[in-house]
Figure 1: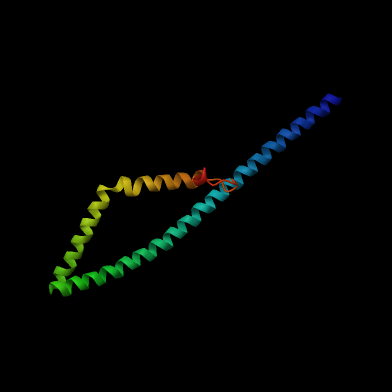
Figure 2: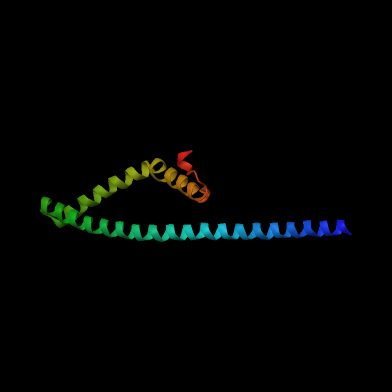
Length: 123
């Protein structure tokens, strides 16, 4: 009889262990999803600000080039040429400038543990 009580206690402990582990995984997943959503919103807001800044700076540079070249068409085509050169440079250097930093940042975000007393970059 005493052995049956121990077996029941062990079974209850195992059930509680799996219930707690399931809850922990659910909470950790919710935390990761919330972090990802917050990062996404932050990037959209920052990206929107950068987009608007680039638009207005482009207009200003286009009109400045137009004044220098005495032609609206030539000024804005010159600005288009500048953007074409910048785009080609980014395309040629995309792996070093874009792909690797983005991949490493995503991996760092996914694997970081907020409860870890020693941050990953200090190890």
